[in-house]
Length: 177
Image (cartoon, rainbow, N blue to C red; front, side, top):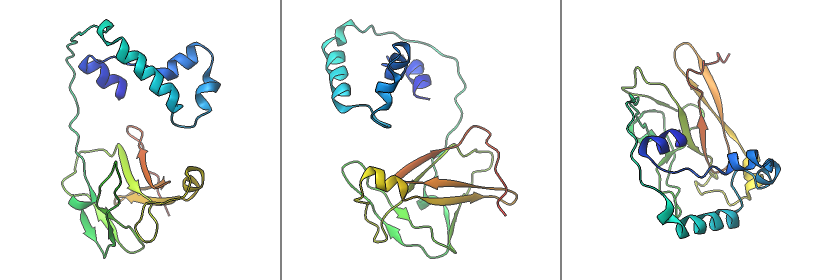
């Protein structure tokens, strides 16, 4: 999606993953987990900034029918049951979170014809605080969310303190018994 939108708006892409693959240094790129080494990103950014005048401005015109997206939050869903409500916030986030516990659920309203492409969730401490555990330990502390309709269901894991689970296009729901 990032590559599609960059091309759509005529932006440049610095693809470090492709660089690692083309130069057979993929093991180097994998050493740092899901994020690149901060000093590497900082130096690449400095070089881009120093050479920004070299970049050409170009406009691409695409005739693409973009799908209609709808962002649904727990605040605008139908709430069934009693919820603990938390407000995890830090320098990057300030959100209202409804704690899903046994016996309560959230339902979509006015979403007929839409497909779920992703799910954003929090896995907080019992007090509602953002976990202070280290990354390795926090990723081992996971929970699960069960999404279902009248006929099918799927279970998606949540991990760490904040997580975004992606769904494959046209992913079939699995029946949970």
